Image 1 (cartoon, rainbow, N blue to C red):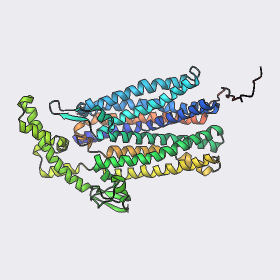
Image 2 (cartoon, rainbow, N blue to C red):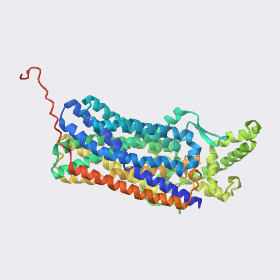
Image 3 (cartoon, helix red, strand yellow):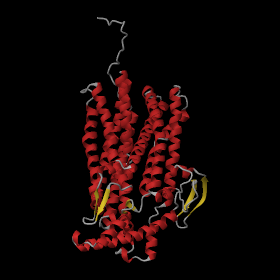
Image 4 (spheres, rainbow, N blue to C red):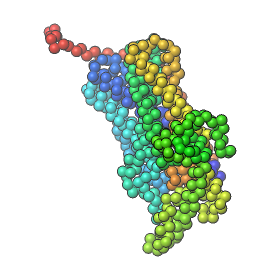
Length: 525
């Protein structure tokens, strides 16, 4: 019954997160593109760039509102569905979330209002500053939520207090500059830039195919192609950094992504394609590329990447160490006061406390982990292996689409440089059809990140099964159905509004073009 609640609670959060992440990348990426377009307008004085900024800004606004609406629910879920998690790590996790809320609602939302209503009330430079602040706000909002998420995947700067039974901050700057969080931030925002670039590229290509708004479409495609090419290349480089950090902090995730059941001699091969079989603990019909995984994962030719079975054996040892810590914790709590705790109990907890989370994996099988049998310890160790097949395929979908985006944006970058954007209708149709693909890649990346750290809600510290609230199955099922219906309605509304705005096209802008006079020309009286 408890496992059903855990699975349903995970499903609910996954559902709301996947829906929410349909809006977030476009908001982050479009904000930067708007700032770039308006910068060109202020520098050149050409009205077409102001018209472009207003048009794409309208689409940004639709997406922004729905992104905020879907994001609010997720923060409430921590208290509703994950109450023990909120209690256990509230001291650490709460601070980034609070700062993110301030960034999103006080910085970003305020300046979004000025962006839409300040065109005729602010100077050109003043409005440009507002637009860049909108872009900064959206990116900073992502920074803080990814700092919180990065800490869940690499819990640094915190320690468990056996007296309060909570994690407490010991070094806030370690949390802030967590290498996993920083890598996730730059990788995620670069992916968001790709989403926006492909969206602008595809919509503009549709205009060219229809023979409408040609000037706006060509200029938009030029910006989107160059920006998208830089972002696509950045995603690859920054994704490589994330993979390298996984070798250090999340070895099981990396092994599962590769469906690497046994440790291979260094440097390990990359599995191009295959069919992972978790029950048989092997990958059928695998095609390997020698050395590639070892170079990506370790950046060396001599360092091994441990396989799943070896990592499971290590997990068994860590579970036994965790049992020592769990036993010491129970004695600490029974002592009542710090002074009454025996010195050997303190020493046992200090020596093994880092593995306490592994002992909590046994809660799935026995109320008191100290009573677990060898068979239960073996099962708990295998529980540290996430769902291999979804990870394996999600990673390859993400990487394959990433390579496609580089090719697509590079092609249109060259066509733009040669002023041949409208010469090849087939390429324009491909750009239109490619519009949904960045979202698929982004969602696949989210699956890799979040499914890959199971069974942990906090890597190595708190199992997901121990973090859930005590709810009834009916309650969770009811909320899942409600969220699915409401969010589906919101997406339908979003798509209808976006399609209507795109079909209507940009509104005419009557501001006169700036006239640049030679210093030798005297204007007529």
